[in-house]
Length: 191
Ligand SMILES: Cc1cc2nc3c(=O)[nH]c(=O)nc-3n(C[C@H](O)[C@H](O)[C@H](O)COP(=O)(O)O)c2cc1C
Image 1 (cartoon, rainbow, N blue to C red):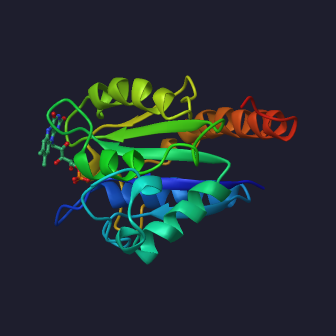
Image 2 (image 1 turned 135 degrees about the vertical axis):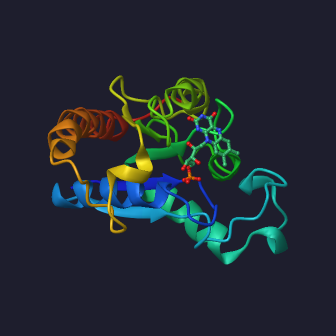
Image 3 (image 1 turned 135 degrees about the horizontal axis):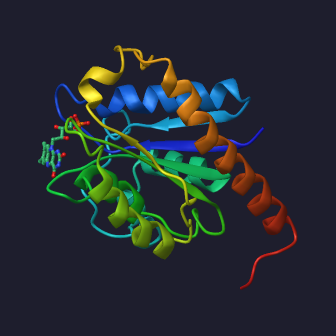
């Protein structure tokens, strides 16, 4: 069992990403993981003024403090990203920019989606350097979801059963990285 944060980055009315995030959350829970679904609406994340560590005490909202605790305790991170103008959505970048050491020496996995047929692959390629810079390198396999508005019901159940097969390979790989990085951290990290 690992602790995993699934980070969603859409705040639009009628957002599709929440369905993809629920799907990933359920699949991870079925593997026995403790999952934190980080929804920027629920956590009312303010527009970034500075990294969390540099904020004044009165700027550190209870939700930001809670988020720091969750990220500190997480063993891995799943980024559930839309593609906005061939790039990453601002609400998601806004969350990750607050933190850094909380992510360090832990793996990430990239899920992207779009209403078109490419499934957000252009945003995906931009996440790789961002996640690497934050110290949570992304696993090689990615999980693009095309036509996201047709792919799930409201609870995040996929309409095509093949999604369960597709996600298996992706999450098997993520599990391996989580276990391997965890063992590595237990042996100490460079300072
Ligand atoms: C600001 C904005 C920019 C978008 N840019 C792209 C794009 O570059 N490529 C694409 O395939 N879809 C694009 N779309 C369409 C999204 O794929 C679609 O709206 C998707 O549902 C967005 O995710 P969300 O519903 O979780 O916000 C864009 C949507 C918005 C709101």
